[in-house]
Length: 114
Length: 111
Image (cartoon, rainbow over all chains, first blue to last red; front, side, top):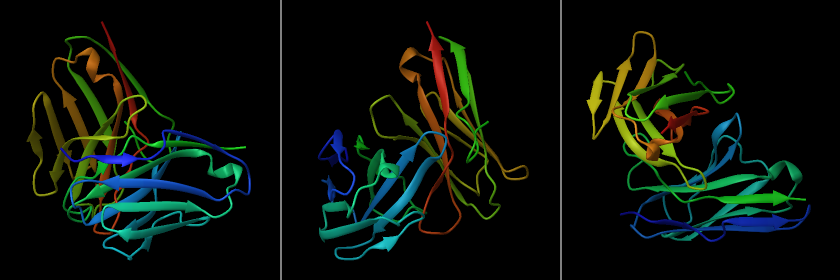
C-alpha cells in the first residue's frame, strides 16, 4: 500500500513564525499535492508538483510556498504564519494526474497559529 | 446531498441498513468522480471512482451511481456497519489539474 507520511500530527505556532510542513511518500509517485481542510469549505488545493523542482499554484496559494527537491518529499512553507492559516493540512500523492487516478492522502497536520 | 460551500449534512442509519449519500456537482464537463471516506483523525481514504462514460460501478459493499443529466452522484453502502461511520466526500475533475471536493456528509451508524 501507498504510504504518505506527514511529519507532524499537531503543530502550534505563533503569528509571524516560519512554518515547515513535511510530507514523504514511498511509492515513487510523480505527483504530490498540499490541501487545507476547513469546516464547511471542504478540501482546497494550495500547491501541487508534477516533478522534482516543479511546482504549480492551486486555488489558494497566497501566504504559502512549496519545495520539492526530491521526488519523495514535498514541503509546504508558511513564510510568516497568520491566524487565518490555522487549519488541517493534508498532503497527497498520485502516480498519474488527478484526472486519471485517485489521490493517496496522509493523516494530516492540524496547525494552530496563535 | 452535499455540494461545495454548504454546511456538513448528516445521515444516521441503523446498523445493517443500506446508506445512500448524495452529491450534486456543478460542472457538466466533469468526467471523473471519486468518493473518499475520512474517519476522525485520519486523512481521506479512497473508496470508489467512476468515469463519465459509466453510470454505475460496484465495489465491495459500495455502489456509485452517476446521473449526468441532473449532475448527481450517489454512494450506496450495503449493510452499513459501525466502521462505516465517517465523513464521506465526493470529488470531481473537469479536466484541470485539480480535484474539486464537496464539503462532505457525516454518516453515523447506530448500533
